[in-house]
Length: 128
Image (cartoon, rainbow, N blue to C red; front, side, top):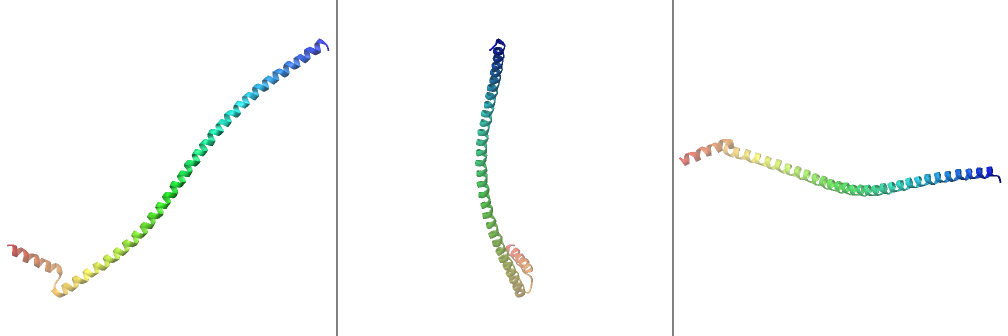
């Protein structure tokens, strides 16, 4: 081998060594990026897990509120029916009182209000 050939081989070796160093540096940069992305993924997975836990808690709260709403709706139905019963009973009592007043007026021969006024006048005279 001649000196020129040796120098050419040395030049090629130097070029290959420089290329290997450049590739090694690039590989280190890529490894750091991979580690950074993996770390970010772990962080995101933890956040997803926390969000899923919060989501599950919210679902439980919604279910509890729906149960409470259903219970209150049933209570409201019961109270509405009870109110209708009471209104019907009141209407019946009102009618009974009206009929009793009519019977008394018929027996007295005058209106109840008129008889009340007469009694008030009598009581005032008795006090004097």
